[in-house]
Amino acid sequence: MSLFEHALRDSAAETRGALYAGTAFHLAPNEASLAFVSLARAELAATLGFEDVRAAHARLSPDDFFERLGRVRKRLYLEPDAHAHVRRVIASLGFDLADLAFDPARLRVIAHRGHENPLAAPVYYAHRDTWYAHPQALVTWWIPLDDLAEEETFAFHPAAFAQPIPNDSEIFDYDAWVRDGHSLKIGWQDKRSSTLARYPGVRGAIEPGPAVGFSCRRGDVLLFAGAHFHGWRPQATGRTRYSLDFRVVDLADAREGRGAPNVDNRSRGSALPEYVLGAERPSTG
Image (cartoon, rainbow, N blue to C red; front, side, top):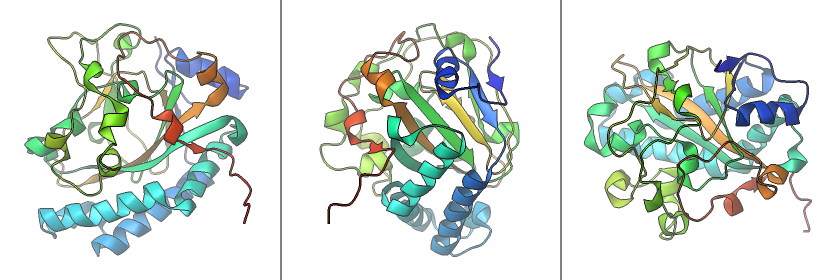
C-alpha cells in the first residue's frame, strides 16, 4: 500500500474515503498553516523567555520548562483564537466546517533524550489514536513548527493498518480519564500523569511490518486516519521538537458508521461529545 500522497482528491468525500482506506496526505505549507505555526512559536518564545525555543530546555530547569510549556499547551487548546486557527487550516484545504467537529490543537513536545525519562514513556508508545475513545472516522492533522529531518518526526506501520495489534485498549475509559479534570487530557499541569493515568499500549510481541517515516518543512500539513498504527521516534539531537496536532471528525460519517476499519480498538466511552463544532454557533447574547 502506498502511504503518502501530496495532493487531496477532487472532493472532501473522496479524500476522506482515501484516508479511511489508509492513504496519508503530506501537503505543502499554506498561509493558514504558517499563521498557526507563527502563533504557536510566538507563544513559546514569550512564555519560555527565549527566541530559540528549540534550545530552551538547556537553559531552564526541567520543572520550570515543564510548567512553562503547560501554560502554552493550555492556551493553544482552550482559547478561541487558537480554535479559529484550527478552523482556518481545515477550511484552507476545502473541507466544509459545517459538517465537522474537532478536538482542539495540542502542542506536542519531544525533548532531547526524552525517551530516557520513565515519566515520559507514554509519549513514545506506538499506538492508534482511536484507542483513546475516538470514532473510526477520526482524521488526525499534524503540523511541525520547524523543518525536521526524518529522525525527528514519527513513523507509520502501514502493514498494520488493517491487521490487529495485541493491545489493552479496553483499559481506556474516556469518562474515567477526565473525571478529575482535563489536565490529563491536555497535559498541562501534572508531570506525574503517566503514573496517574492508564494509557493503552501494545501487549506482547508484534510484527507490525516496515516503518515508513518522513521529513517535513515548517508548516507542512499531514493528514492521516486515526486508525493508523504509528509512534514517535526517540531523538537525541540536542534540540526540542515541537508540533501541533488536532483531530477532526466528519459528523455524518461518524453517525453512519463510515471510517477506517476497526481491527482492534476496544476503548470505552467517547471523546466526540467534547469536540468543538467546526462552524461557530451565532452568539445569543
